Image (cartoon, rainbow, N blue to C red; front, side, top):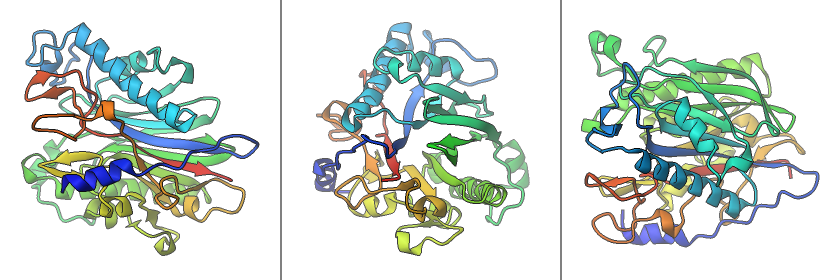
Length: 356
Protein backbone atom coordinates (compact mmCIF):
# COMPACT_ATOMS: atom_id res chain seq x y z
CA UNK A 1 0.00 0.00 0.00
CA UNK A 2 1.36 3.38 -0.87
CA UNK A 3 2.86 5.45 1.91
CA UNK A 4 0.62 8.35 0.91
CA UNK A 5 -2.37 6.34 2.08
CA UNK A 6 -0.77 5.90 5.48
CA UNK A 7 -0.16 9.62 5.81
CA UNK A 8 -3.72 10.30 4.70
CA UNK A 9 -4.89 8.03 7.51
CA UNK A 10 -2.49 9.65 9.95
CA UNK A 11 -3.82 13.19 9.47
CA UNK A 12 -7.48 12.31 9.85
CA UNK A 13 -8.64 13.90 13.08
CA UNK A 14 -10.66 11.97 15.61
CA UNK A 15 -13.79 13.66 16.89
CA UNK A 16 -13.29 14.69 20.56
CA UNK A 17 -15.26 12.51 22.96
CA UNK A 18 -17.50 14.08 25.56
CA UNK A 19 -18.16 12.08 28.71
CA UNK A 20 -19.78 14.76 30.88
CA UNK A 21 -23.30 14.71 32.30
CA UNK A 22 -25.69 11.85 33.04
CA UNK A 23 -25.25 10.22 29.68
CA UNK A 24 -22.73 7.41 29.35
CA UNK A 25 -19.96 6.68 26.87
CA UNK A 26 -17.33 3.95 27.09
CA UNK A 27 -14.12 3.27 25.16
CA UNK A 28 -13.65 -0.41 24.26
CA UNK A 29 -10.38 -1.38 22.63
CA UNK A 30 -7.79 -3.98 21.73
CA UNK A 31 -3.98 -3.93 21.74
CA UNK A 32 -1.48 -6.57 20.63
CA UNK A 33 1.37 -5.99 23.09
CA UNK A 34 3.93 -7.80 20.92
CA UNK A 35 5.60 -10.42 23.06
CA UNK A 36 5.17 -9.12 26.57
CA UNK A 37 7.31 -11.75 28.33
CA UNK A 38 8.90 -11.64 31.76
CA UNK A 39 12.45 -12.93 32.28
CA UNK A 40 11.50 -16.33 33.76
CA UNK A 41 10.77 -19.59 32.02
CA UNK A 42 7.25 -21.03 32.19
CA UNK A 43 7.31 -24.82 32.30
CA UNK A 44 6.04 -26.49 29.15
CA UNK A 45 6.30 -23.33 27.02
CA UNK A 46 8.72 -22.49 24.25
CA UNK A 47 9.60 -18.95 25.32
CA UNK A 48 13.34 -19.49 25.64
CA UNK A 49 14.25 -16.51 23.45
CA UNK A 50 12.79 -14.22 26.11
CA UNK A 51 15.24 -15.17 28.84
CA UNK A 52 18.41 -13.35 29.91
CA UNK A 53 20.53 -16.00 28.18
CA UNK A 54 18.12 -16.39 25.25
CA UNK A 55 18.39 -15.10 21.69
CA UNK A 56 16.87 -11.73 22.64
CA UNK A 57 18.99 -11.37 25.80
CA UNK A 58 15.76 -10.45 27.57
CA UNK A 59 16.91 -8.82 30.80
CA UNK A 60 14.97 -7.13 33.60
CA UNK A 61 16.06 -3.78 32.19
CA UNK A 62 14.51 -4.55 28.79
CA UNK A 63 11.41 -5.97 30.43
CA UNK A 64 10.90 -2.84 32.53
CA UNK A 65 11.33 -0.66 29.43
CA UNK A 66 8.74 -2.76 27.61
CA UNK A 67 6.24 -2.39 30.46
CA UNK A 68 6.82 1.36 30.55
CA UNK A 69 6.31 1.64 26.79
CA UNK A 70 3.05 -0.34 26.82
CA UNK A 71 1.73 1.76 29.69
CA UNK A 72 2.76 4.94 27.88
CA UNK A 73 0.57 4.06 24.90
CA UNK A 74 -2.42 3.19 27.10
CA UNK A 75 -1.94 6.49 28.93
CA UNK A 76 -1.70 8.39 25.64
CA UNK A 77 -5.08 6.99 24.58
CA UNK A 78 -6.54 8.19 27.86
CA UNK A 79 -5.13 11.66 27.31
CA UNK A 80 -6.67 11.78 23.83
CA UNK A 81 -10.08 10.53 24.93
CA UNK A 82 -10.08 12.27 28.34
CA UNK A 83 -11.14 8.95 29.81
CA UNK A 84 -9.59 5.52 30.39
CA UNK A 85 -10.71 2.54 28.38
CA UNK A 86 -13.55 0.81 30.20
CA UNK A 87 -12.54 -2.43 28.47
CA UNK A 88 -9.18 -3.26 26.87
CA UNK A 89 -8.45 -6.66 25.34
CA UNK A 90 -4.79 -7.60 24.93
CA UNK A 91 -2.81 -10.34 23.22
CA UNK A 92 0.75 -11.73 23.07
CA UNK A 93 1.14 -11.79 26.84
CA UNK A 94 3.02 -14.58 28.58
CA UNK A 95 1.12 -14.96 31.85
CA UNK A 96 -0.79 -13.22 34.61
CA UNK A 97 2.44 -11.94 36.14
CA UNK A 98 3.18 -9.64 33.19
CA UNK A 99 -0.42 -8.37 33.28
CA UNK A 100 -0.14 -7.53 36.96
CA UNK A 101 3.16 -5.76 36.35
CA UNK A 102 1.62 -3.76 33.50
CA UNK A 103 -1.48 -2.51 35.33
CA UNK A 104 0.77 -1.48 38.24
CA UNK A 105 2.86 0.83 36.06
CA UNK A 106 2.71 4.42 37.36
CA UNK A 107 1.43 5.71 34.01
CA UNK A 108 -1.80 3.71 34.29
CA UNK A 109 -2.10 2.56 37.92
CA UNK A 110 -4.85 5.09 38.65
CA UNK A 111 -7.13 3.32 36.15
CA UNK A 112 -7.33 0.42 38.64
CA UNK A 113 -7.56 -2.15 35.87
CA UNK A 114 -8.63 -5.62 36.91
CA UNK A 115 -7.66 -8.72 34.90
CA UNK A 116 -9.39 -11.71 33.34
CA UNK A 117 -6.87 -14.27 32.11
CA UNK A 118 -6.52 -18.01 31.63
CA UNK A 119 -3.36 -19.96 30.81
CA UNK A 120 -3.81 -21.42 27.35
CA UNK A 121 -2.28 -24.22 25.28
CA UNK A 122 -0.24 -22.13 22.84
CA UNK A 123 3.16 -23.76 22.49
CA UNK A 124 5.03 -20.45 22.43
CA UNK A 125 3.26 -19.52 25.64
CA UNK A 126 1.29 -16.42 24.64
CA UNK A 127 -2.30 -15.80 25.73
CA UNK A 128 -5.06 -13.21 25.44
CA UNK A 129 -6.57 -11.32 28.37
CA UNK A 130 -9.03 -8.58 29.28
CA UNK A 131 -8.50 -5.45 31.37
CA UNK A 132 -11.58 -3.80 32.83
CA UNK A 133 -12.41 -1.00 35.25
CA UNK A 134 -14.48 -2.57 38.05
CA UNK A 135 -16.43 0.62 38.79
CA UNK A 136 -17.73 0.50 35.20
CA UNK A 137 -17.94 -3.21 34.35
CA UNK A 138 -19.08 -5.98 36.68
CA UNK A 139 -18.00 -9.47 35.62
CA UNK A 140 -20.69 -12.16 35.81
CA UNK A 141 -18.82 -15.01 34.16
CA UNK A 142 -15.75 -15.76 32.07
CA UNK A 143 -14.61 -18.74 30.05
CA UNK A 144 -11.57 -19.83 28.09
CA UNK A 145 -12.98 -21.36 24.91
CA UNK A 146 -10.73 -24.03 23.38
CA UNK A 147 -9.97 -24.08 19.68
CA UNK A 148 -11.60 -27.24 18.31
CA UNK A 149 -12.46 -28.58 14.87
CA UNK A 150 -15.86 -30.10 15.67
CA UNK A 151 -19.23 -28.80 14.41
CA UNK A 152 -17.61 -26.79 11.65
CA UNK A 153 -18.58 -25.86 8.11
CA UNK A 154 -14.99 -24.93 7.25
CA UNK A 155 -13.18 -27.07 4.70
CA UNK A 156 -9.89 -27.83 6.46
CA UNK A 157 -6.50 -28.15 4.83
CA UNK A 158 -5.17 -29.93 7.92
CA UNK A 159 -5.38 -33.70 8.12
CA UNK A 160 -7.12 -35.33 11.09
CA UNK A 161 -3.74 -36.05 12.64
CA UNK A 162 -2.64 -32.44 12.15
CA UNK A 163 -5.88 -31.26 13.72
CA UNK A 164 -5.29 -33.43 16.78
CA UNK A 165 -1.78 -31.99 17.22
CA UNK A 166 -2.80 -28.38 16.50
CA UNK A 167 -2.30 -25.89 19.35
CA UNK A 168 -3.18 -22.22 19.40
CA UNK A 169 -4.56 -19.59 21.72
CA UNK A 170 -7.91 -20.15 23.40
CA UNK A 171 -10.60 -17.52 22.86
CA UNK A 172 -11.57 -15.57 25.96
CA UNK A 173 -15.21 -14.76 26.72
CA UNK A 174 -16.19 -12.36 29.50
CA UNK A 175 -19.83 -11.57 30.24
CA UNK A 176 -20.95 -8.81 32.60
CA UNK A 177 -22.76 -5.53 33.11
CA UNK A 178 -21.57 -2.29 31.53
CA UNK A 179 -23.59 0.82 32.25
CA UNK A 180 -26.42 -1.32 33.57
CA UNK A 181 -26.62 -3.35 30.35
CA UNK A 182 -25.47 -6.91 29.68
CA UNK A 183 -22.40 -7.24 27.47
CA UNK A 184 -20.16 -10.07 26.36
CA UNK A 185 -16.61 -9.55 25.13
CA UNK A 186 -14.64 -12.06 23.07
CA UNK A 187 -10.86 -11.65 22.84
CA UNK A 188 -8.99 -13.68 20.22
CA UNK A 189 -5.56 -14.07 18.69
CA UNK A 190 -6.21 -16.23 15.66
CA UNK A 191 -3.54 -18.48 14.08
CA UNK A 192 -0.55 -16.94 12.35
CA UNK A 193 0.03 -16.39 8.63
CA UNK A 194 3.58 -17.75 8.79
CA UNK A 195 4.35 -19.75 5.70
CA UNK A 196 1.24 -18.45 3.96
CA UNK A 197 -0.92 -20.90 5.92
CA UNK A 198 -3.81 -20.80 8.32
CA UNK A 199 -6.73 -19.53 6.24
CA UNK A 200 -8.82 -22.51 7.32
CA UNK A 201 -7.88 -22.25 10.99
CA UNK A 202 -8.55 -18.50 11.11
CA UNK A 203 -11.92 -19.16 9.49
CA UNK A 204 -12.56 -21.73 12.20
CA UNK A 205 -11.62 -19.15 14.84
CA UNK A 206 -14.17 -16.72 13.44
CA UNK A 207 -16.73 -19.50 13.31
CA UNK A 208 -16.15 -20.40 16.97
CA UNK A 209 -16.73 -16.81 18.08
CA UNK A 210 -19.85 -16.58 15.96
CA UNK A 211 -21.28 -19.86 17.24
CA UNK A 212 -20.63 -18.84 20.84
CA UNK A 213 -22.18 -15.43 20.19
CA UNK A 214 -25.36 -16.97 18.84
CA UNK A 215 -25.62 -19.18 21.94
CA UNK A 216 -25.35 -16.11 24.18
CA UNK A 217 -27.91 -14.19 22.15
CA UNK A 218 -30.34 -17.09 22.48
CA UNK A 219 -29.71 -17.45 26.20
CA UNK A 220 -29.71 -13.71 26.95
CA UNK A 221 -31.97 -11.86 24.47
CA UNK A 222 -30.75 -8.30 23.99
CA UNK A 223 -27.16 -9.00 25.05
CA UNK A 224 -24.62 -6.72 23.40
CA UNK A 225 -21.50 -8.40 22.07
CA UNK A 226 -18.08 -7.10 21.04
CA UNK A 227 -15.64 -9.50 19.36
CA UNK A 228 -12.07 -8.22 19.24
CA UNK A 229 -8.58 -9.43 18.61
CA UNK A 230 -5.56 -9.85 16.41
CA UNK A 231 -7.35 -11.89 13.78
CA UNK A 232 -4.27 -12.21 11.51
CA UNK A 233 -6.79 -11.40 8.78
CA UNK A 234 -8.29 -8.27 7.37
CA UNK A 235 -11.98 -7.61 8.06
CA UNK A 236 -12.66 -8.44 4.40
CA UNK A 237 -11.19 -11.95 4.67
CA UNK A 238 -13.42 -15.04 5.02
CA UNK A 239 -12.82 -15.49 8.76
CA UNK A 240 -14.44 -12.13 9.45
CA UNK A 241 -16.69 -11.47 6.44
CA UNK A 242 -18.11 -14.98 6.04
CA UNK A 243 -17.71 -16.93 9.27
CA UNK A 244 -18.26 -13.94 11.60
CA UNK A 245 -21.00 -12.59 9.30
CA UNK A 246 -19.31 -9.17 9.31
CA UNK A 247 -21.07 -6.40 7.36
CA UNK A 248 -19.48 -3.17 6.22
CA UNK A 249 -22.66 -1.09 6.32
CA UNK A 250 -25.00 -0.76 9.28
CA UNK A 251 -28.01 -0.91 6.96
CA UNK A 252 -27.02 -4.46 6.00
CA UNK A 253 -26.71 -5.79 9.55
CA UNK A 254 -29.41 -8.35 10.23
CA UNK A 255 -30.39 -9.82 13.62
CA UNK A 256 -27.68 -12.52 13.38
CA UNK A 257 -24.97 -10.40 11.74
CA UNK A 258 -22.08 -8.34 13.07
CA UNK A 259 -21.19 -4.79 12.09
CA UNK A 260 -17.53 -4.59 11.01
CA UNK A 261 -16.42 -0.93 11.28
CA UNK A 262 -12.87 -1.49 10.09
CA UNK A 263 -13.90 -2.62 6.59
CA UNK A 264 -14.55 0.94 5.46
CA UNK A 265 -11.41 2.13 7.22
CA UNK A 266 -9.28 -0.47 5.41
CA UNK A 267 -10.76 0.66 2.10
CA UNK A 268 -9.90 4.26 2.98
CA UNK A 269 -6.20 3.59 3.53
CA UNK A 270 -6.00 2.95 7.25
CA UNK A 271 -3.72 0.28 8.70
CA UNK A 272 -2.95 -1.15 12.14
CA UNK A 273 0.19 -3.01 11.00
CA UNK A 274 2.35 -3.49 7.94
CA UNK A 275 2.75 -7.07 6.73
CA UNK A 276 5.11 -7.84 3.84
CA UNK A 277 5.16 -4.18 2.87
CA UNK A 278 1.39 -3.67 2.83
CA UNK A 279 -0.86 -2.00 5.36
CA UNK A 280 -3.54 -4.17 6.90
CA UNK A 281 -6.04 -4.05 9.73
CA UNK A 282 -5.70 -7.29 11.67
CA UNK A 283 -6.63 -5.62 14.98
CA UNK A 284 -10.38 -5.78 14.64
CA UNK A 285 -13.44 -5.04 16.73
CA UNK A 286 -16.91 -6.10 15.60
CA UNK A 287 -20.28 -5.58 17.29
CA UNK A 288 -23.51 -7.54 17.12
CA UNK A 289 -26.84 -6.23 15.89
CA UNK A 290 -27.98 -5.34 19.42
CA UNK A 291 -25.18 -2.76 19.62
CA UNK A 292 -26.05 -1.32 16.22
CA UNK A 293 -29.83 -1.22 16.43
CA UNK A 294 -30.08 -0.36 20.13
CA UNK A 295 -33.21 1.36 21.48
CA UNK A 296 -32.98 5.09 22.07
CA UNK A 297 -31.30 5.87 25.36
CA UNK A 298 -29.34 2.61 25.52
CA UNK A 299 -25.72 1.97 24.58
CA UNK A 300 -24.86 1.69 20.89
CA UNK A 301 -21.73 1.98 18.78
CA UNK A 302 -21.15 5.56 17.58
CA UNK A 303 -18.91 7.22 14.95
CA UNK A 304 -15.72 8.70 16.39
CA UNK A 305 -13.47 9.64 13.44
CA UNK A 306 -14.54 12.34 10.96
CA UNK A 307 -18.10 11.76 12.17
CA UNK A 308 -18.36 8.75 9.87
CA UNK A 309 -15.88 6.02 10.91
CA UNK A 310 -16.93 3.85 13.85
CA UNK A 311 -13.42 2.69 14.74
CA UNK A 312 -10.11 4.33 15.43
CA UNK A 313 -6.55 3.14 14.88
CA UNK A 314 -4.47 4.95 17.46
CA UNK A 315 -0.95 6.12 16.76
CA UNK A 316 1.22 9.03 17.73
CA UNK A 317 4.61 10.02 16.26
CA UNK A 318 6.49 8.42 19.18
CA UNK A 319 4.93 5.05 18.23
CA UNK A 320 6.13 5.25 14.60
CA UNK A 321 9.50 4.31 13.07
CA UNK A 322 10.93 7.61 11.81
CA UNK A 323 13.68 6.36 9.49
CA UNK A 324 15.28 3.33 7.88
CA UNK A 325 13.83 0.23 6.25
CA UNK A 326 10.62 0.33 8.29
CA UNK A 327 10.03 4.08 8.14
CA UNK A 328 6.41 5.06 8.93
CA UNK A 329 5.58 1.60 10.32
CA UNK A 330 4.88 0.82 13.99
CA UNK A 331 8.02 1.15 16.10
CA UNK A 332 8.45 -2.38 17.41
CA UNK A 333 10.48 -3.77 20.29
CA UNK A 334 13.12 -5.42 18.09
CA UNK A 335 14.22 -4.52 14.57
CA UNK A 336 16.31 -7.02 12.62
CA UNK A 337 17.15 -8.75 15.88
CA UNK A 338 18.29 -5.57 17.64
CA UNK A 339 16.47 -4.16 20.69
CA UNK A 340 15.27 -0.68 19.69
CA UNK A 341 13.13 0.05 22.76
CA UNK A 342 9.96 0.38 20.72
CA UNK A 343 6.33 -0.33 21.51
CA UNK A 344 4.57 -2.91 19.34
CA UNK A 345 4.39 -4.00 15.72
CA UNK A 346 0.65 -3.28 15.95
CA UNK A 347 -1.24 -0.06 16.61
CA UNK A 348 -4.11 -0.35 19.12
CA UNK A 349 -7.68 -0.01 17.91
CA UNK A 350 -10.91 0.94 19.64
CA UNK A 351 -14.59 1.79 19.38
CA UNK A 352 -16.92 3.89 21.53
CA UNK A 353 -20.38 2.90 22.76
CA UNK A 354 -22.68 5.61 24.04
CA UNK A 355 -26.30 6.28 24.96
CA UNK A 356 -26.08 9.95 23.93
